[in-house]
Length: 343
Image (cartoon, rainbow, N blue to C red; front, side):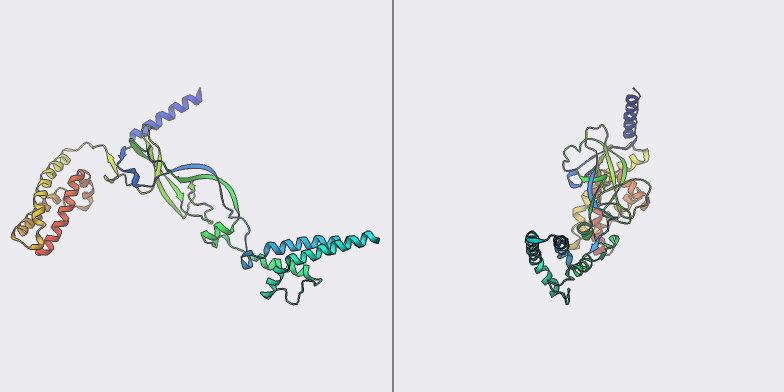
């Protein structure tokens, strides 16, 4: 019963949170990369592993190691066979000697290649100290320890042993069809954008806690208002960009209503002047007069936000998309005409 009450309270709080946030709809979500977060167990580089930097990229390591193992076994058997007398002992030693020759023959190509690289100097394939020299050679072939934190990402992934780690990971959300309806910005997450030995983090890992991480990107969490749409994460959707999202019209103050009304008139005047100003390259009298009128009109528009850069953003939020487009085109054409006429 307590659990049920808790879930009800949680649902009410989530609902209150969604209505307390400003909501919006996405205009064209197909233009953006969207993600989800999943917790799972992933195979990632073991930052605490001991990794060697082998000679010759480790080409000879396995062969020399296998030779040592095989040769030690057969050598031990040969020594033990010395205690067996008579015909049976001779037969066993003959068989073991043949096995020894097979082992030497099998690994002789690797031995010869290493000799061609100036190893095993003065040592023959039948030398009594071949086993001891092979053990020394194996240590050289295994190389020295690598400093994992100094490895590039390619070597980190290819040379370092993997281990399984459970964490939350940012992943592509392939199906965007259910991103619909109204959303609100519910929070942010930090996501590691690379494997980072110093931070102990992995690529696309969701970073939690208060630790200071050095390599991460920030993603916004977009949550469906009524739960009918798919919740998702994104890093580059500007919720204040009217091209990206559609917001509910805000209630305007008396001064804001005056600005909107004025801009309807100025928009019509811009539209009527545009074609005449656009003829400025021909330097006609009509284009010159239209440019002068355009300058005066531009000052009227600037007066609506006191020609103040700090107020310009709020001013632009009051305008509809068509008015903004007309205003941008008008300013660009007028700028060219002013330069040509030297005004």
